[in-house]
Image 1: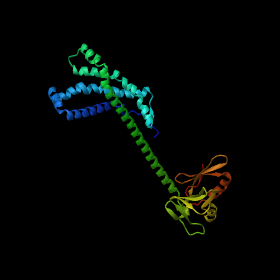
Image 2: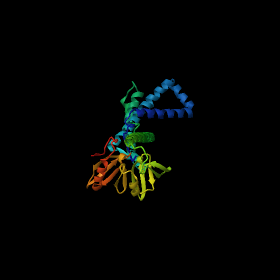
Image 3: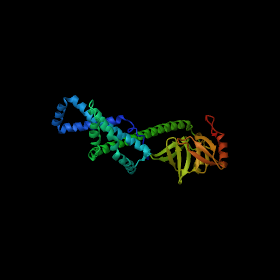
Image 4: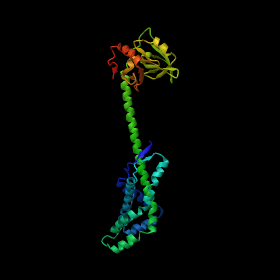
Length: 333
């Protein structure tokens, strides 16, 4: 994966603001109860019971600060649009540069969320006792100070970058899962294709003949005598001779010249200097360019051989003698 597509699914879901706030509140409550349980008990008694304490916390903290989180996360989402951020390269340096672009917006986010947060707090705390002077002096002018700005700054940076990284991680995991599923689907498709192609290659049973029936070859597992009827083609690469068979590729000691004289000429054909093909392995052939043709074999990868026109004429004449048991003749496409 070279880059991450920024879908922002986490940032675009408003409910995530609620989850983040609840997690933060529960962690702070657990810490405060473990450190100063006596103080917390006193506050619960002062509120008139646990339920009333929860109601006060909701009015004074949870609902107002929920507005703060919602605005901060919405601002992060909108910043992607303003800066036209659609992808980020999958490199630590690129990710760092991507996250730094949000720093100025988080620094000034106080000017956006504070009026809303304090207005909601005023409406909940001063229910049925509303006063514009109280609202303006104690909830607006009093909170627009450096003291309140720095009081909010660290939490806003932590929450903002936590949300940003959760969103980025979520996009990365989703795309990696999609890539894995696509790779698995492609592998399954390729496996089915290999199976289908391998079923079209039906080597004739090995019978006693004056021609070469078995050949000794060497593979990664060792040496083995294999039937030549199971070979798609023989070829030479870097002065080494190979037999590509149904099971695996074998390195053989015989040259193509030797094989040409020893193999059954009705079953194998020297299609060009560096290839001998099995009649049963020919899938089809088609004109390519400059008087040359491409012959496709029904190997798992549909191996292609480029053949000159002069040799192709002899090859077509040889194919006309195809065994009647072969249901599909080679097609000129």
